[in-house]
Image (cartoon, rainbow, N blue to C red; front, side):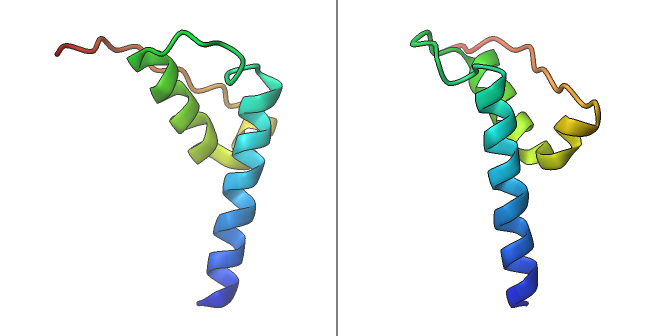
Length: 62
């Protein structure tokens, strides 16, 4: 169980690094698509460095 948690944390850290390299955190323009793309990029983790480039299109209605 402990090794799984460690692997999950490493996976997510790699995803955050990938999102940072794509400059997803640099804009102050919050939107549904931007937040969703960041979340999917972080969840994809190391797959980002294997060629994955997840993008999400959505609209927020309130």
